[in-house]
Amino acid sequence: MNYTATPDFLKDRVILITGSGNGIGAAVAKAYANYGATVILLDKNIAALEQVYDDIVASGATMPAIYPLDLKGASIPDYDELASNINDNFGRLDGLVHCAVTLGQLAPIQHQDPQEWLETLHINLTAPYLLTRSCLPLIQKYDNAAIIFTTDYYKDKAYWSSYGISKAAIEGFSKQLADEMECDGRVQVNCIDPGKVKTAFYTRAFPGIDPSPLANPEDIVDSYLYLMSNDSQSVNGQVIKAQ
Image (cartoon, rainbow, N blue to C red; front, side, top):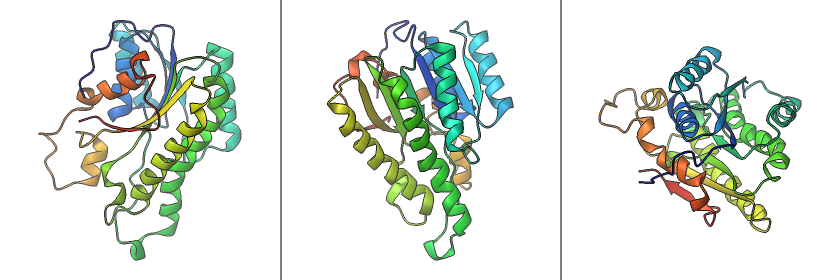
């Protein structure tokens, strides 16, 4: 997708991005900050978050914030506390972007480890639900807010197991939430399928494939910019392909 954003079109907006320590999440965070947003960087890897933070500051973009959280072990009160802290420190939340993900175990269903299945579904599906649930009252306070989920083409392919199931489910959850938000008209909810991107995640999923010809995370952020812009106000409940 090619989208030309207006300079500073995200000025004064506060956007929370999960999985922003690396890969697509980090690229989206940097792009949003470059267009004026105050980004809240959420990831379990503190060192990675600090590097993204430093990169944003060094670029001269809007000062970000760091919120370390391990989605695997976070409890329901942890998400409520996060939303409360955002309200106390920023007074608003204009966008929520879900990029955090775990691959789980790629194997036939009968050979899946049940515990890993549960953990993968929790990180990729239950945690986004819990975070969205806690943040929704704050997001609904302002017009032109957006919630973006990240999905995957491989959701219904053989051997993708709990990862694929979680992505199919997140698309269903996104459409359900979009339907519920439609009457209010303030919050647009959509999914983005980034396609094949040169990330550490892709290398883990396809260790035998050379990733060098693939798009870099920075090359596919246009879709995330578009869905966070006023130009996409009529787009709701859709799956957007980034490339």
